[in-house]
Image 1: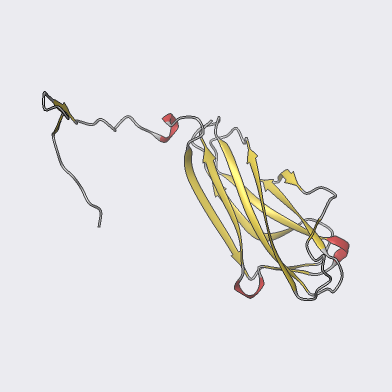
Image 2: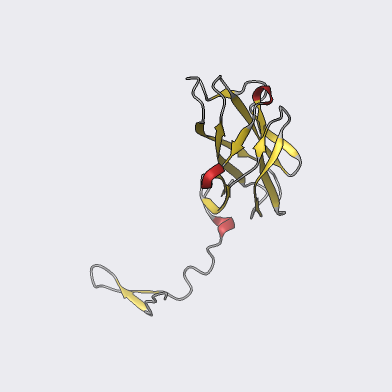
Length: 172
């Protein structure tokens, strides 16, 4: 249950006057927040994702949509991918962030090697972030893709482990 405080006036600290409080906050809107303010946060999570065994970027089912309030807003995308491999040799993977069908961030040709100790059944959890400028007030979908190094099988978010995608609209 929400609490309410109802007052018509506040007395000044020195007791010499009062402050009227009629609709003082009615003009405050998300679009008028100072530059750098967080206007909204959207979170998506993935558990029991797919197995990836291709060097081609593949959708893993981790996506979220956000509708920016202003065309000058930035979208801070933060994502973490949980990966497991059963190989006893070095194995790596790459990720890519898409806005709609457009790639806006990619690990390019350098994979993040995560099994450097040659252990089988290795699990890793890497986090990434990117500040995007979509220049729109339309609903915008961001999604994560993953690719395997050397076509080794990667299990994404297996056994209830979570991969997450967080989108934050930042006032521009």
